[in-house]
Image (cartoon, rainbow, N blue to C red; front, side, top):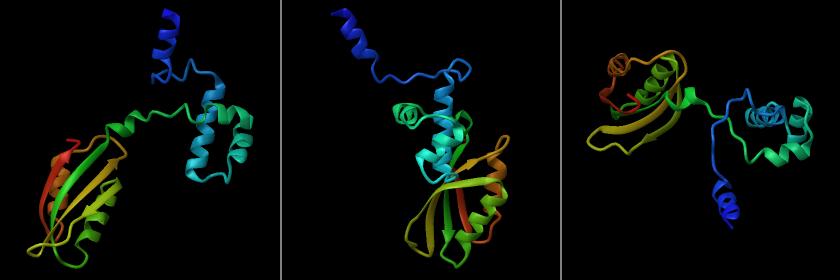
Length: 154
C-alpha cells in the first residue's frame, strides 16, 4: 500500500535534470520539438527524420519534456509608459526598444484619455545585463513620451 501511495505522489512531478545525464532520445525529442516550433520542418515526421528518432519515440516523450531556458526567465522586463496621443509615438517606442536589443513579447495600449494613452510593454533582452536607468532615459528621450516606469524585471 505504501508503495502505491509513493508512486501516486511521484506521478507528474517536474524536476530539473542536467542534459549530461539524459538519454539521447530525450534531447532529440527536444530538438525535434524546437524545429517544429521554429517552422524549420513542416511535420513531426520530418522533424523525427532530421534528428534521427522514430515517430513513436517522439510521441512518447513530446508532451512530457520541455526545455528550460534559464536565461530567458531572468531577462524579461515590463515597462509602463504614458504617451501623448500623437501619430507615430508608439512606433518610435517600438523602434527604440529594437535598437536597445529588446525582443517585444506583448504590447497593451489603452484608449487615450485627456490626450494621453497608457501602454504596457513586456520585453526580453537578449545579451548581457540591462541597465534600467539607461533604458528609462532612452525611452523618456523619445518625443511624445510623458512618463516611463519599470513595473517588473528590475
